[in-house]
Amino acid sequence: MFSPDATVSPSPAASSTAGHVPAAAPQPAVSSASDTSRQVSPSSALAVGPAMPRSAPVRLRIPKIGVDAPFTDLQIGPSGALDAPPADDTNLVGWHASGTSPGERGTALIAGHLDTATAPAVFARLSELNTGDTFEVERVGGTTAIFLVDSVESFHKSDFPDRRVYDDTPAALVRLITCAGAYDRTAKDYTENLVVFAHLQSVG
Image 1 (cartoon, rainbow, N blue to C red):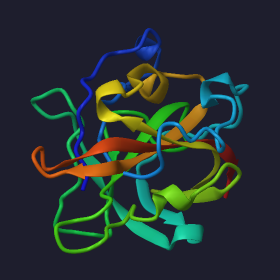
Image 2: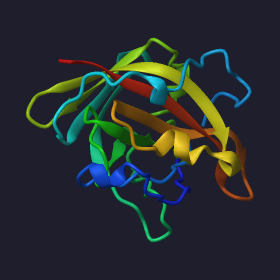
Image 3: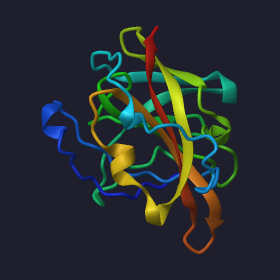
């Protein structure tokens, strides 16, 4: 499952990026917040590296965990949070279509479900990624953005670091987001979000 929840709050740099609206926080599931063994320096500390022109993503491929999924557009809903991808398709990821595109300068958001009521979903194995792993986003026009994982971290939904995850940046960054932690049957939601922090490594 996946349930967004942090509200949209424009960053100081938002006005310098045409069409960019820092996203809201979705809510997906995996490793504990106390697990710091896979963390590296925050992506925001990276020197400004390569970047690509704006282009909508077409397909996300993460060979290590068997992901090969098409994209759907996601928008900010009435609550001020990023809408979740449709729950009836287990092999589908969504991106914040009004925000930064993957490979473009700024922070791009890619969300996917951990599971559905009946089966594992596209990001069921997202917690298996580690620092140094790579994944790629195929984009409209035939270009491919290749990303390097900086860290894989889990946060309780009541203490989600909005600014760190969503802030604008001069580097080309991406966040993969899903649910994590225990499933709260009363709230019908997971207690944590898993976030994969990554930066553009190269262009394919």
